Image 1 (spheres, rainbow, N blue to C red):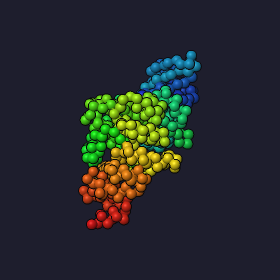
Image 2 (cartoon, helix red, strand yellow):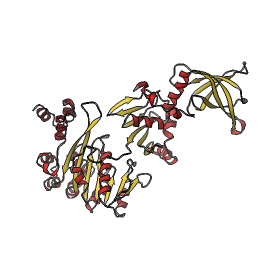
Image 3 (tube, rainbow, N blue to C red):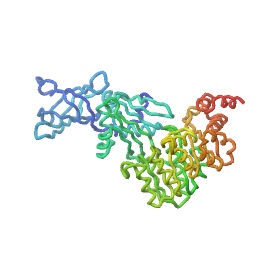
Image 4 (cartoon, rainbow, N blue to C red):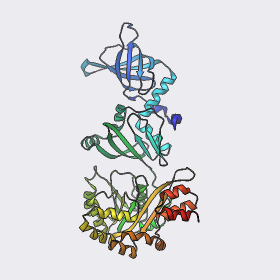
Length: 467
């Protein structure tokens, strides 16, 4: 990206804002005045404000140097003092000065650094460049993830002090309190244009850092996402458990949002969504959609699921099954006649069922397989693969439908034999991940190396690719 980011700079966004620039200044009218060192309160490319215990007067001429982080040389300027505010009962004064003489390239450097520490401007740039994630790291430029690749922004590195101010500006007072208590925080954040972001704030070697996921405003349909038609059929189920699985960043949340939107459009249902945090915002269409955020609207997934059963729901969406309690409540909700949609960080149907069973003691696992066999409706596994033409990524899927034969295998704990049913279950919409990858290769969407890298059975895939 490099300096190309400059074309995205909105000059109005390079406004006066807080920044920890050290400034040396001396009063021109008093030649014997020694230089003073202060820290700017806020700054723009045309003016700045700073605090000092020195008492100056309006109109005073000031010459100074701004020590901008990561610039090799200080920025020199002359300025005119325009405003004075007394603070702390006369012990300090807040001065506003307007630059009279400053080089154009230095003004641009100030604007670029301000751009580097203005959260909203960075998030707007992320949307324009079609980034999926933004990473803020101390003493580094911010990074975007574009089409699965981590790309440095080419901006100035961000000091730990400025980065802390940036991240704290996104938090509510309650969020700050929760972070101080747990040293970790997940929440949602929106810019004025309405775009939402999922934010994780954490510490790294004592520095406050953050990772943000871009949440598209528009909820795409199941077909627009490239999901198989059988996914649409699953949304018409009245009860049971539907699981969407895949690694982090594979689009699980986007798939679930499309499925909820399909239900919202096609049936008069009460949909309760339990998320941490809320990402896609659903408007009520034919259905009533209630979205509850863990930490803000409820204390935990398990607590919210338990009480949602008393709220007359038709559909319950659980953002993620994380532990024994939330898995147990999800299975109970599905068993008692509700349609439950949820996600797991696994790849494949068999792995998902093992993951759910493994959170239980060994003596209870057979019982869990029996319960799964009665309530499971389907498992959708997905990954995103780099396109052959370099224009983004393409979706590969695996779909397991809980046919009577599959349910029997689950009930008897013969999970590993499920893979043999993908080929014979094609009529019901089932297919394996490898068959999806092979189809993408034949359609010219991915190259051979990608197909082999992501295949479950690489030896068999190699044979099929060269037929």
